[in-house]
Image (tube, rainbow, N blue to C red; front, side, top):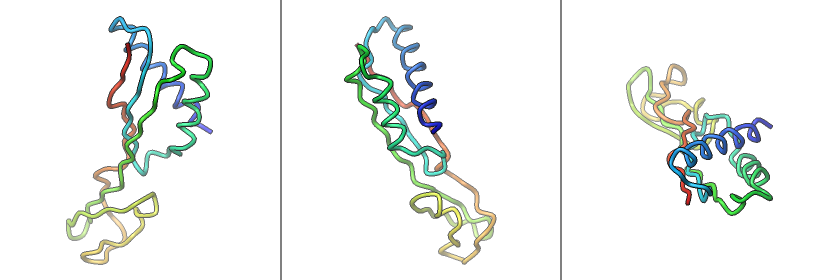
Length: 117
């Protein structure tokens, strides 16, 4: 379960940023997570909560914006998307081409904001 190490890395980054700004307590982290990021969102949430248990940051919340897959057809240039990883293998709804699509969004895993006091 690599989500536990991801949660630890997110917390490390958040705490470093808070310390640099003179804050002592983490209250929230906001992430953007793409459909192709290879992250099981529920496992990441669980790992985040487990790592915070018994710490001063225990009540910090993790907000995750799930980013759907967005593709550009390599044959006709049409943009389309879908839910989940399986959408990557769907044919273009405009021309039917199944291969050669460019991923425009859906691979990201970004910390958008860190909140603290």
